[in-house]
Image (cartoon, one colour):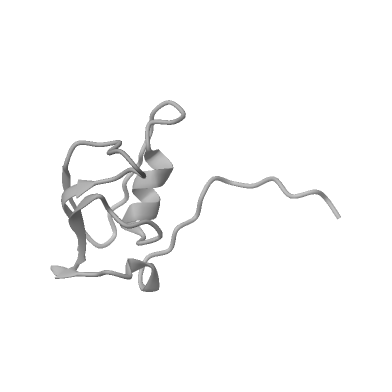
Length: 83
């Protein structure tokens, strides 16, 4: 299970209030909203590509400082030239 406890994301300033959620194996999650609200920042923080400003990300109840060893992050689809 992937879990966020009091997770606050952002760079110099918080983009979110503390977030709490649990995502069981096989479940999916969607982040949606206008540009600039922190969707990619949240995804990168969950994947340990960015350090949270507060709270923690846990995998099976254990804090995972380098969740990217276990989580795959695929940003937006990129169009590649033909050929």
